[in-house]
Length: 377
Length: 169
Ligand SMILES: [Zn+2]
Image (tube, rainbow over all chains, first blue to last red; front, side):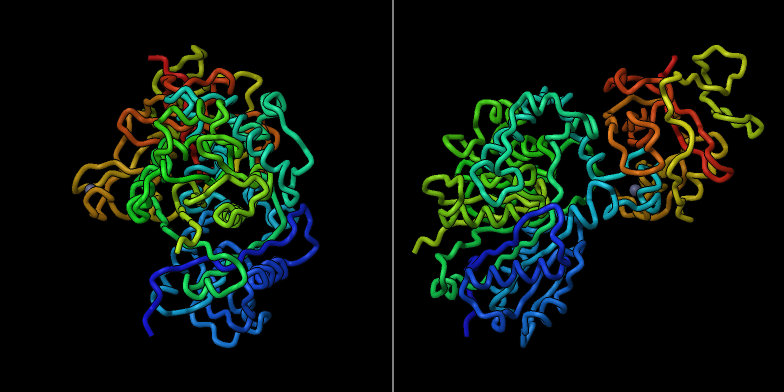
């Protein structure tokens, strides 16, 4: 049998997003997976591939055991941090193309608010060991500190302002206000709210920072051909790529500067072909930096774009984080961005952009990105 | 760089901005509480020369003996030429603030009584960048480009941290 050369997302699923799920991360994962399989119309026993975040606590074998998977042919975890969503899509797609598995589910379930809170450093702190010996004694304790360091320098070099960052948060909140699943569905946000909110780690204000969320999500990947016979219109994986730094961290450019050209080449597209974007907004300033480093706009132009309404779902040049993103929907670290990227390609978002041909998803400011598109036969 | 094991408290860089009688005592504004108990580093045995230099009042940075590239934080291999042989090169201790952040909401008990405090990224004049704190500049007075120099702050018998202050020269 020839191996498939095109891969699609056949189903997506998620749990509710909350501050205290009251269930285990394994339960959240399983509930998201069964929702995604139901969406696709695939029986759990047909799953033969499982992939997840290495920082999580729900190993593939435990999932397989609960789902009743009979023959798990492809499984694995990618080990970096929360930013591996696109890498998992790339790896799962490669496995399907190679004929190593037919139905691969990418999943995660996290109690990111009631359990291990990223913002506390509980997941990432090295407790003064390894490279942490050179940073943590000076108060550089969480990923937020390194990112704030980059943001401060970049503001200095490009003139981007806190108010422009604030407009990222305000725009995303407006998107969340249309999305009943979003944590901040019924809470508006103004630029004044942002500008008067307290600093957490300066230059990041409270409303520059992502939520902490309990919840789960899952995507079902299979060949485009098989997806065409399933319940939902297929969403093709047009490109998926990952990137890790191979050189000294400069504290100024983001990885998007390096991943971008490779992603566009893989897709045979360029930034102007993207109709909508989901961007990993752990902190609002990084939406601005990603827009610049991927090449959607020139360096220094991301702030003005945001300020002029350029990322709004209704009429923006490039609508961004149309479900509310990590700032206002949920913080499932790229998972909720992948789900929304698929919805935009299906045409089912609560802030739907018209005629989406290419739906861009960044899952870690250049450390991974996916381009989804509808199935044009 | 001074190297006086008899000095109690901070061993300072050669110049003394405070003009006090004790050339080893940096001036710390009363509103700053950046010294004191800290989250301690756990030195890796391979990096011991870095830490012993600090104890001796020297800032030494890993330098590839094959191509002379400096690298920090320490790594086993030189990414420029792939050599593993290295030495620990004495730095001038001078540099400037490349970037900084100010923590307002602490996440670790060691910093809970110190907020707001600034963490700075120092660009040494020799090139490498180093995470540290400034001992004599309040967070709202820090500026990118501020010239600084190292001071040595012993926190335990084993651990001395490189901190920085406004440069005088
Ligand atoms: Zn070398």
